[in-house]
Length: 286
Image (cartoon, rainbow, N blue to C red; front, side, top):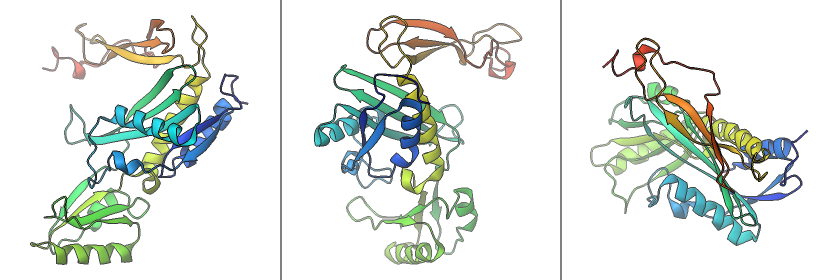
């Protein structure tokens, strides 16, 4: 049974052209009692993962523009959109991570509720393929063919890139590689994992987990004003080292709050961790 909330029985506009309703419909139906209606706007106008269209804004503002784009098109008062960014971990450059965002917009209450997660389980990767190089090992690493890949000539410029997308089986991939090698002056091919949600089951699972978290949050009222959306707004770093007590960069506490009235309170970490391993300590492990 969904938790009672102001959104039970309501219809929410989901702005997507990449099938994200497959990940989000059940969390919002079972967790909130709300239904999703897709507004298939051309969100590629705001930027693409593969780079044909440059994303000119950060992920959060792009996500917000997506949600508002769908609301403007449909006339709905409740909107939902997701966005993500992928790249090397800031502290461990060899490790790829994904920052997934899911934003809920309530025009009547004038509020926006954001849930986000840093996901280490991502197949984000690129590969410069030499003329005679076999891509099999790299393809296995990114989960092909369950996960699709994108190919283009390596020396292409933005105005003449010959993109080959939706590559999720061997024969089309072979044809795309041959075409890219013919088009490239050195016979090189640029390969990358397709990070669009409908071509990336790993990312779709991350969106589903985020949907569950957001639905639960929207069903949780603020203890001060009872508005929906009570949840984590920020974190306070400084978890002390277990050996010497020095503050580390790890989370010491969570800042819970309400986007409607601004009420906030600090709470301990939900995992109960009260001290950091010395490996994270700038004194014990400089």
